[in-house]
Image (cartoon, rainbow, N blue to C red; front, side):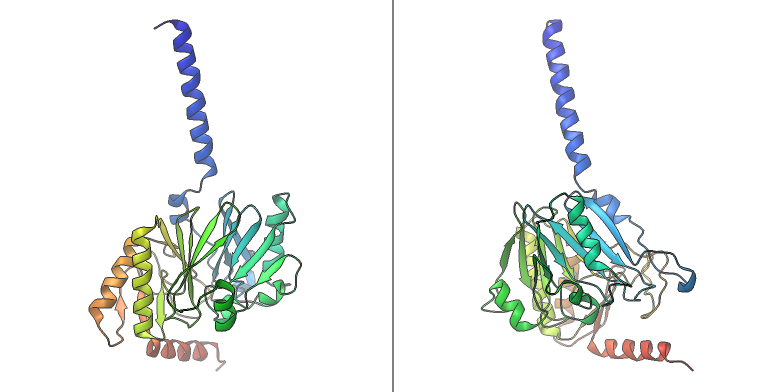
Length: 317
């Protein structure tokens, strides 16, 4: 082999490696996200200096937001996915007051940083419980914003579901397609969203590293089974919920706590979803508590006791 040919091959290999490394640097690192330590409140929120929202950039087009537990103990996660013409926002957090919790302005700044202020915004919800819709007023009526109201009629009409909870809808953000699946059981309008770019299945409160509160046992079981079947035919890389309620050693944080040190990873796996389906089927027709290191299935009776405990904890002596 001549020196000239060697030089061409070396230069070509270097260019290829450089392109590959550049592409890798632009892609999100799931291992980094799995090990991410989020803002998690404080024993004394009066002295806490966390921002009201933590913004995590997974890749150039994908962001995860976490609300501070010192703003609201629920501390939900929200997802912001950019396409070429539309940015998708799932959930608006647990606080209405923009002065305390500026979720709309935070996302507007992300749009402005891209140099494309004309991007449209589509705001939907994983479900309609208050800690996921409280910030809606910050988006409602804003130019370029489509807010899908959090109720049965609006959700089914917008996504075109005619045989709820069967079927699926697609949303094209421009070079990025989302698949939307009905997922009732935790709540009647609950949805799961699959992102073709990251491979994430966004599961709201239905599947997360914490307590899976089940209001409708047979409907919840059917929804989990549909998600499992979907994951078997689609490249799901991670199951992403909207709360963390367990420690890394599997203990449950008490409901209502403003401080959660050593939190479990936000990231669950398709295998966790398969395991959940298997355990639900094994449990049978009667609601049962199911405890694992990754999640705790809590039927509605458990939820009522948790609410009573929160009310007691928040009521002055």
